[in-house]
Amino acid sequence: MNILFLTMNVFTDVHMHNIYSDLMLELIARGHRPFIVTPRQKSTGVKTARTDDPTYTLLTVQTGNTAGVSLIEKGISTVTMSGRYYRAIRKHLGKEKFDLILYSTPPITLASPVKKLKKLFRCPTYLMLKDIFPQNAVDLHMFSGGSLIYKYFRAQEKKLYRVSDKIGCMSPANVKYLLEHNPAIPADKAEICPNGIIPCKVTDRGAAKAALREKYHVPEKAVVYLLGGNLGRPQGVPYLIDCLRKCKNRTDAFFLVCGSGTDALLLDDFIARERPENVVRSPLLPKQEYDGLAAGCDVGMVFLDPRFTIPNYPSRALSYMENGMPLLVCSDGATDMGAIAEVNGFGLACSSAKPDEFAKLISAFSAADLKQMGRAAREYLENNYTASACCEKVLGVLK
Image (cartoon, rainbow, N blue to C red):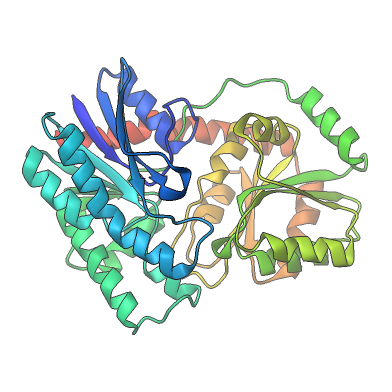
C-alpha cells in the first residue's frame, strides 16, 4: 500500500530513530511504501523537491520560517503552510494512488489540505493527535479563550477532527479529554495510539555510567537525573528552577539538563547566579551523543507546566525507558503519564508547582531499587510503546 504521511517534523531519511521515523520503518517492514511530506524553512534555502528511495519517497516542501522568528512571522508561516503542502503534493505526487492519508498535530491547520486530498485520492484519513491546540496556548496565557485568534484556531481544530476518519490519542486521558470537549466526535472515532519507537538492543550501561560520573565529578552515592529535549514554555522552566533550587544543597542527587529552547536562558541565568554544584547544563546534542549521555544516567525527568488543563504525554519519556531508566514525572493535574508510571512500577510523580513534593521524590528515589524500576520501564516500553503497536492502530482504519 502507498501511505501519504504529512508531518511538520524535519525528515532527512527514515533512520532518525524517533516516533515518526520508526513508524515509517515499521510500515516499510510490513511491505508498505510511505510518501513522507516534510518541511524546510525558507531560511535554509532548500527548494521543494521529490526524492525517491527504493522503499520510500520524501517530498521536501519549502515553507515560511517558524524557528527563531517573531510570533507574527511564525503565525503567518503556520497558516500558509497547509496551502504550500497541498500545492506541492498536487504537483509532485498527484499521479500516485494512495490507500491512506496519515498526519499528526501540530499543526491543526491541515484540515483544508487533508479534506482536498481525501477527495482527490479517495482514501481514509488518520490523525495522530500529539498536540491539543489552541487550548494548550490558552493554558500558557499566550492568548485568551475569548480572542479572535483562539476562535479561528478552534474552528480549524474542529474541522480537522471532522475530516479525520480515526483520531489516535496518546493516552486514556487524551481520549477522555477529546471526547468531553468535543461532543460532536463519535466515541468510536477516538482511540489510544501511543507514542512508539523501535527499541534499541539492551546494552550494559556500566561503562557509560562510570564515564559520566568521572566527567562531571558526580558524588559516589548520588542518583543522576536527566532532563533532555526542548526547554520552552510547555516544560515549565520556572518551576523546574524552583525544584532545582530546593535540592541544590543535596549530595544524593545530581541533575543534568540537556537541551535548548525559548526558556533555556532562564535556567542558564539561575545556574550562573546561584551556582548549584549538583546541576550541569549541556546544549542540545546530536542524537548519537545524546543517547550516549542518557545511557550514563539513572532517572529520566519529565517536566510540564502546572497550568496545563490538557493532557500531554511527552515522547522524551521513551528514550529514558529505552535506556532502562525510571521516570520522575513533574507535571500538571491533567496528564496521566505520572499515574501510569506509578501504577506500573516504573516511576514516581508530583506536581511541578510544588518543589517540596519534588524534594520528597528525590529522597524516595535515593532509597528505591532503581534497577528494578528501570527494568519495569523497559518492559513497559516493549509491551506498550512500540512503533509496531502504533502501526497496528494506524492500519486498523483500513479494516
